[in-house]
Length: 144
Image (cartoon, rainbow, N blue to C red; front, side):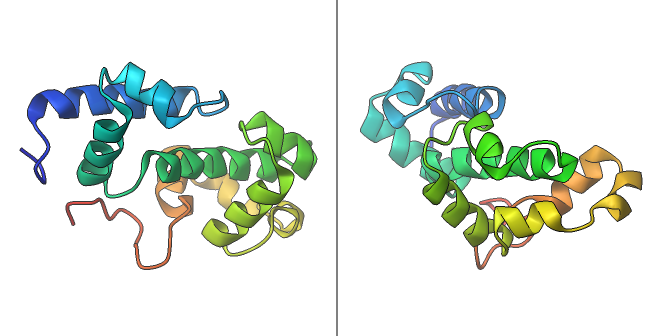
């Protein structure tokens, strides 16, 4: 058991987390993710938070913001296009969450020069550019 989460539940939770990682741009909600995990929505939400240290919604938004950062670094899409490409339906909510997690607005992030990071392998860049909430550090998992 990890933080009171049964091994069978962890397997099902990972299935839902993998769905969020792959299909972040789809309209995913707790009900849909709970179905993937074969759990009730309430049990899924509680178990997900216990296992991963954040709510399913927070995890999904982090994935979406990670992808948005990559699209904004490319520079060929507007902020609005990026918002919808990553599965957000409200530009205002997207901009607010992006600013909260990244520390600058999507427009400011897009306008900034990103050439220095081009030589860094994507797997390394992902660790250091992952959006983090206040109080968490890069690489820190829920069990740290």
